[in-house]
Length: 431
Image 1 (cartoon, rainbow, N blue to C red):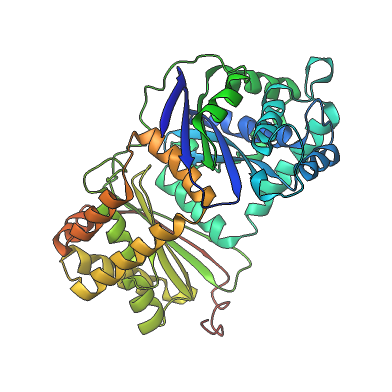
Image 2 (cartoon, helix red, strand yellow):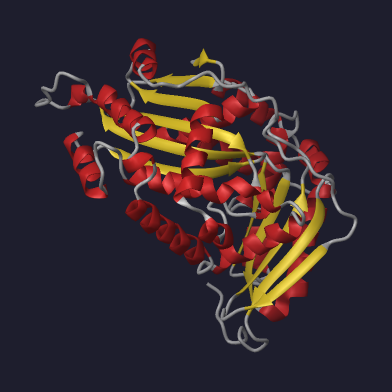
């Protein structure tokens, strides 16, 4: 059920008796701007830490405990041309608590907590608490730096920088960058906070055994002003380059990370979106895929090999862990798998298996409140509300020719390898 609360504020209600909890998600969605990403990430950290009523992390944790172990968190997400500050809260449905006697139900108490976080933060003297601000800026700095400890993440980020040269917002992590972070002040974060409340599109989603009236009544207490309806689409569209960008770096790694980036100019609202999903699953998106079977298992050229498709940016990436001296051979065999799909060389048996795995994954998502809540934002941004039965029928109709048509639109744009010294990989055993 999709409800427009007021201009720029929407509600997706997912009523179900399947869970013993009620999940709440509130997304503040703004245009993706490189200059604002870091400040918004730091704002999320600060808001998550305290409120005027619960001025410390300990006090906030105690309140969550009083709410029978409610969970709460704030994160940041990049989606195409959008940057999202996401608040989540999950509370027990009190009808399953025999001893619950509080006059206010837990859902309403959870909504009141989110209201306090958003509209009554800790602002002594009209600005964010200096101690909290400094601590959370340091915590975010540590988090950003620690990302590079994951060498596959580091390789993928460097690949994104090659792929989106000149577009820093697309290349940047959703957490921002350390240089900008070091320059931010509490005044900057306060300005970002007021900008978010006044102008961000707001998408609220609730899942559980709760009525529309209860949700809208709780939301009516939130001082959300009307804001302009978003006019830009969420998709980042770009022009493919005629020349492949290449890069490599040396790092203290034993297993080299070879990543490849392609353009796949099919977006979530396009007619070929589902065939593109099937293509990715057959190419490298599942353990049934050609990359997993032929590059990892049969040729034994990779410790892992997989692909990922982003329908908000029209980008397809391949991640492999290899011995550095095999780089050219791996690129060649990955290219062979893509060319096979471009030539329509996909068995009907593999196609059926891949489609069955995608259906199983979709059905499994119905058992995850968080995945359903996240899907609500994707549907809201793309204005696509597709029933499961309709999606299932479309999946069943995808043919080898459909996958071939999608594969023929894929073009290599960048390659990046993060490797150790030339002799570093020689004695490693594949796992």
